[in-house]
Every structure is written in structure tokens, then in C-alpha cells.
Amino acid sequence: MSITNKVGIILLMVIAIVLLPYLGAYFANSGVFPENYFQYPVLGCPEKAGFSWLIFIAFALVFLFVIVVYVYPFWFGFKRVPPVKNEKGPEVGFPLWFWLGLLMWGGTVFVLWTKMSEPKWILNWADLPIFWGFTLMLDGIVYKRTGGQSIVSKVPQELIGIGTASVSGWLLFEWLNFFVEDNWLYPKGDMLPVNEFVLYAVMGTSGLLPMAFEWFSLFKTFGKFRHRYSNGPKINLPRWVTTSLLVICLAGLFLSGFFPNMLFFSIWLSPLIIITVVLERLDIWTPFNAIKKGDWSPIMIFGLTYFVQGMLLESWNYFSGVYIEGELMTFNPAYWSYSIPYVNRYHFGEMPVLGLLGYVPFGVYCWIWWITYGFMLNVPSRYYNYKMEDGPF
Image 1 (cartoon, rainbow, N blue to C red):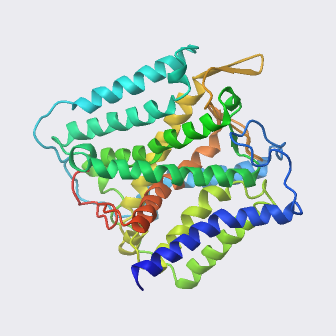
Image 2: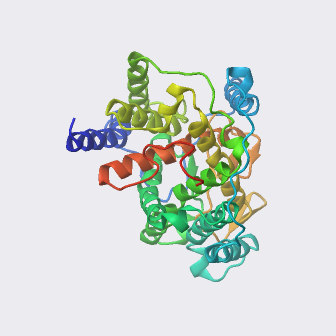
Image 3: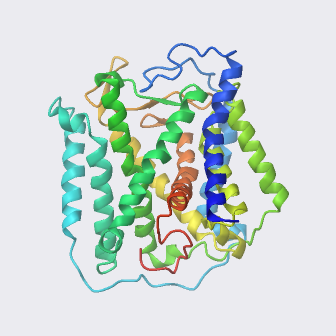
């Protein structure tokens, strides 16, 4: 199949992901959407289904299973690998961009956490210096640990490309969020004019995917951990299984407009599964390919990137506001909170604790989306046919 045809199929896939939930909601609402259904930023949301111990326990068991697999992989068919020394190059100091990132990130967090009302230009655009500042810090740590090799030092253009892909990669979730009646919202988003908030969202979300790749680079500098999941069960799903998954996920997106409470979790899984299956059918490499040879390291380690980063994001967000007699007080217009059915209890910051599980597939999605975006635009990348042995970053 030609590259042009493959790109065309990928575009149709993306259109399907965008259009199916809209069609489902259109029919569910008899062609008349409720007022503020597509309001952005989302300032409020409909009342959700109440807490359910049955559903909470079910998701908790899944969460526990994931944790056990990560901590005790040898219980699940993974074999121990010989000890691997950390790969360290010559001694080098932290690069200039580490200190620049520390200033960007640290200064902005200080302004947010001390609940300062000025300067507005920092408060209104806080995510941009926080996300990119932290990205530069992580890269600087990788640079020091590897003796001068990191994404910024070797392929800075790729980090910019990943940042560009990050905008569309995240805004897709903002779109899908409408059709589950707003799992997350920005209760103080009206502190900014709508056009400014949208511009802010576009610019700020450019830093989301780069942090995942920097965490991956950092995790790889720990030799033993880098290969911890490299000798596991070899799984090659039959074609009928992947076809079934594709159909179920496409149907789930369509039905989310009918059953937003029941399918609230689908937006975190469906895009990842749909895109991965389509790329596989087009014979485009994804990190899932390594599982066929028993190497789970790319998926397992990349899944951890946003589990760690997600907890940091929730912390940065939570401490930028304070609740006084139940009323949120913050000068951060991008402060977010959650409205999740069935499991909205026991929180980590604003996030229901079981919601942290959603960060694991989102981490893998970051890689899958970059492959998709780069392939469509013919952008070269070292992450398109990647092996864990490929370089120190």
C-alpha cells in the first residue's frame, strides 16, 4: 500500500474518532444539544451518577492488578534478566537549559502556590513555563546522567515536533470530554476571555507529550529497570481479536453520547486502541510490536511516564488553589477539577484516586500519537522503530 493511501486511512480514522461521539450525542439528544454542551472552557457540568462500591471495587482491583504486574512481573511469566550496569558517560555538569527550566518551572510554581494575584501574565499562562520548564529540567538530568546525551543536546528539533503533536494530541481529549458530560472542568476558566483561554490551551498543551518522552529517557538511564520487562510472555493477538477491539472501541465512542456515565472511562482507552490497531493493519511500527517478541519494556516503562507525571500535575494544580468554606479560591484560570461518576471518592489532589490509573494508557498514547502525527506529516523520528538498546535517551 502506498504512503498516500496509508495517510488517507489514518485521516479517516482520526475523523471517525472525532465524529462518532458527536453523531452518538446528536441522536441521543434528538438533534438538539443542551445549552452549553460545547462550552469551552468547561465551567460546570451535569450531575453525575453517585458513588458505587461495586464499580469502585472493580476498578480498584484492576488498579491493584496493574501495580502487582509492575512490582512482581515474575509472577506473570516474566523472566529475570542479568544485572545491567547504568550507562554513564564522562562526568558533566547540568547544562544551561536545566537551569533555565528550573527558573521557569520553579518561579511559576512559587507564584501559583503562594496564591499571588500578580503578575497576571504568569498566572494566565502558567502551564506554558511549568510544562516546558520541567521538560528542560528532566532533559538536563538525563544529560548529566549520560555524560552529555539527551534529546535537547542531540535532536532538539524532535522535541519541538513532539510539542507540536502534543497540541492536537491533547485537544482530541478535550473534544471527547464533551460527550462524557465533562469528566474534568475549569471552574475558574471565565477569568479569561474565551479566545484567550483557547489560545492559552493550545500553547500550554504543547508541553504535555514532551514530558512523557523525557521521563522515558530518564527511566532508561537506570540499566536494571530499563530491561526489567524485556523477557516476558510473547503475545501476538489473532486478527479477529484486534478487529473485535477496534469495533468495540468505535462503538464505545458512538455510544458515549447515549451513556456518558457508563462509558466515562472509554475516552482514555478507545483512541489508544483504535489508533494502535489501525497502525498495525497498515504495517506501521508501534511499541506494541515488541510484545510479540516478549519485550514489554517499551510499553511498561512508557506507561509509567504519565503515572509519575500525572501525580506531579495533580499536585501542581491542587496547591495553586484553596477551598474556603467549600468555595474554590485561586488566581489560576487553568485550575481543573473532576466530575467522575461512580468512583468519585478518596482523592489525590482533585483527582479521584482511581483516576490515576487512566494516566497509564495515556502515557502509551503519547508515543502512539507522535508516531501517527509524524507519519502523516513525514516527520523523521528516532521513535518510529525503536529498540530499548537504541542509544542512552
